[in-house]
Image (tube, rainbow, N blue to C red; front, top):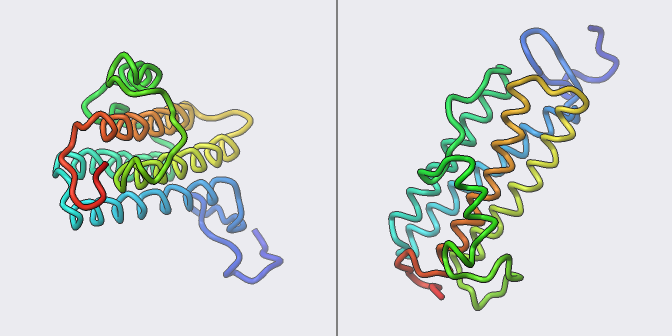
Length: 181
């Protein structure tokens, strides 16, 4: 393909295929990169503030999924598994949609600083996951491949998993450091 713009405005999509850097799939890849960076930063910050190692490790399952999603998207290959936090996709959905029955926590309370540092960090990650999910929908429209359909499902469950972590924080599942509610 002959480039009409400078090569710096183009990037490799797959194999020999070059696309503009604002191509929908490249935008989705950027959102995955940003979300993964935020997850790693959250892990470091929570660790430094003395939060329970279990919360930091559960965020590692999120980081691992993001790495696998990136690979799946680039190669258009299915993910090997979809679960997070030791829960199946169905259990993630159920717990996320019933926080009162599962954790004794009101559903989707508006965030407030009184909920503490860990809750605020997780809420930021959940919001970023939703932005990435919207980019995925735009990238894979109108006819997603089977692997892309699986990525879309995983992105939906990712925001559910982060919501579950938020509920667990409010329910006191993790020992908190500085800034604990």
